[in-house]
Each structure stands twice: as C-alpha cells, then as structure tokens.
Amino acid sequence: MADLDRKSQGLGNRPALLLVDLIESFTDPDCPLGSEADDVVEANRRLLDVFRARGLPVAYTTVVYHDDRQARVFRDRVPALELLKPGTHWVSIDPRLAAQPGEPVFEKQWASAFFRTGLDEYLRGQNVDSLVVTGLTTSGCVRATVVDGLQHDYKVVVPREAVGDRNADAHRANLFDLNAKYADVLDLNEVLEGLERF
Image (cartoon, rainbow, N blue to C red):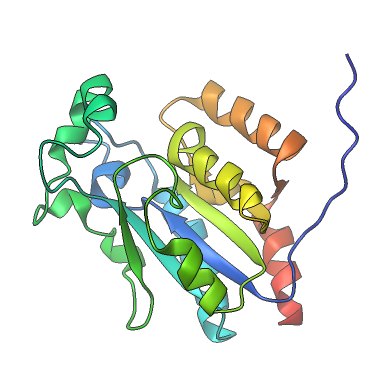
C-alpha cells in the first residue's frame, strides 16, 4: 500500500520549543525509566541556545504524581512511574538543560503535554503557531504530544536527533509514523537552518 500523500509544513511565524520530559528519571540510564540520552540532551542544548538567542518561547514538561489517585491506571500499567514524586530529583529537569526565568515547566500526569495542563493557554498567550517538539520518549510522551499538537492546530516539527527512546525499533517506527501523518520529522541541522529567519 502506498504512503499517504502529505505536504511538508515546517515552522510557522512564531515557533516555540517544547522539551518533553527531559527530566533526570528519563536521562539517567540507572533509573528504570531512563536510557542513555547524552546525544539527545546535546541536541536539545543546541536548540535551546538558538531559541533563546532569538527570543522565541521555550517550555518544558515534567511528570509529577502528588497523590495516589492521579493517573492510577497509567501508574498501575507502568509501576516505575511511582518514582515520580514531588521533591525528588527524578522529576527535575536535567541540569544540563535547566529552565531559565520565564520558561515555564508544566507538570503532567499522563502522556501528552496538552492533557490537563495549561500548555495550550500559554502557547496561545505567546502567539505561537508552530512547535518544535523534543524529548523522551519518542514512542510515548513525545508521540502523544505531537499528535495533540496537531489536534490543537499547531504545525509540528520533530528534530530526529533531539528525541529518544529506550527501544531503538520503537523510536524508528514512531518517527516514521509521525512523519507520515502528524509532523515534519527533520534532521537537527535542517531545523537549525530553518530558525535562521527569526
């Protein structure tokens, strides 16, 4: 069966960088939720430098469970999520990518950065029309956020070097599928070049 016909959309007039769950529990391979993510962190550092230099919006997500009722089915499905408690270092943004003043960190309890958070309101308030979505993991929270980004009418770009997954096959398959339907999956250098016009 042939692939769907699709049009590349790229960035709009006011992109934001959204770093999904680049928190210590996901970037530390010693954590049950983590993986070797140094290359992903470095790609995100390069993107942060460019977005900040151009005064473009930057936002982060973390996952935090404040009580036993939040996302109970998800937590029962993936018991390692129980590590993500308030005040633990596991829910902190990786210090190599620390947020600066004015860069919000949205707490979430489910996969999508849009689900039951104030992310969309923040983006609308910043006049954002497109997203560069990065982070961990490609097959989980990144994918859910990309799909929801499209469903909130944002053009979405995913720099392939700036996302990662514990499973290489899942990573490749999800990038293929995201590019087929929901986003432009591009090389990091292509994204950086596209940001030069801002």
